Amino acid sequence: MPLITAPVVTPEEPPVPPIEIPEIGYASITYVDPTGTRWPMTDLAGDWYALAEGVSGLGAARYVLTSDPHPRGGTRVRHVQAQARSIIWPLLVKGTDHLAFTRNWRALASAFTRTLRPGPDGRPVSPGLLEVARPDGTVRRIEVVYDSGYDGRGQPATGITWDSAVLTLLCEDPYWVDVVAQTVHRETGTQVDYLQPYPQVSSSQVLGATSLVNPGDVEVWPTWVVTGPASAITFTREDGASFTLDMEDTAHGTLLEGETVTISTDPPRVRSDTDENLVDGLNWPEAVLWSLPPGETAVTFQLDGADAGSAVDLTFYPRYETA
Image 1 (tube, helix red, strand yellow):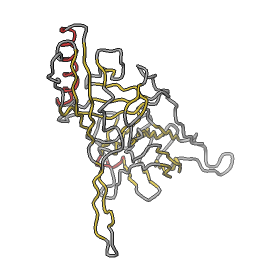
Image 2 (cartoon, rainbow, N blue to C red; image 1 turned 60 degrees about the vertical axis):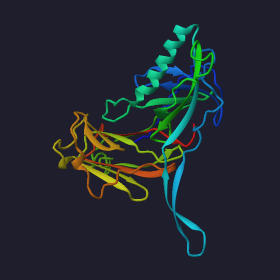
Image 3 (cartoon, rainbow, N blue to C red; image 1 turned 90 degrees about the horizontal axis):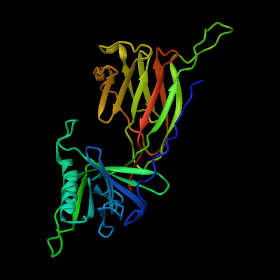
Image 4 (cartoon, rainbow, N blue to C red; image 1 turned 135 degrees about the horizontal axis):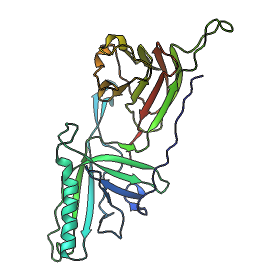
């Protein structure tokens, strides 16, 4: 029988003891610059750390509501749009002497402003990450881009062995993302002869209906990896939204045993394991590369031409309103 499996991954322990941060309580926070270098932000014994007083922007996202007057009075909300988030991040930098302080001050300036350089994926910026780790080991992160504020206080005694700055960090996507992926694996069972030892049906067409659970606060856009053999792939959500990838309508042709195709829903992208663009095989304009709303959602996986080894792997990272 096909099985659903979800591996359990234990996040790494927070690198420093948690401290109390306004809006979110006790947490360890780390900034990860675009090069992957990690900068602890809540280690009070370090040469730099966030100043808890004045931190803001770690709570729920800001929304713009579009509404229309209601004939019987009041109003009716017609559209809700989440807005980019700004995080205010007061930061203290110090050193054992002036030269040590200067090295730390310059290094952190580079770590934050590096987010404004073009990214390798073609984006005009290369975001860093702000990671919030709880004492229970759970971690959420958000992409940040330096906006402004890395400037000293300009007061007597500052700029010699210590100084502070109040940074504004822009978050293009206002939601926090879990660092541990949710995964579902669905695989075709062993094929059998229809007439041996008696008439029976094997799962050569439909991998089956199942329920997917999104534990986050907002919708997510999953990535699907399909392993052949398969000639056509159809994924349907309980409300009828669906998409079909007909491999025979692509230059690649039928997906053979061991070959894979990856379907990304945001941004829409379909690639073979040899990086062929197969997006023309989707059943446009009817295709809906659907998202997964919070909570439990019934879905159906169908692979035409499936055989032993045919499988579907779904991956997504839960998204949350707050850190």
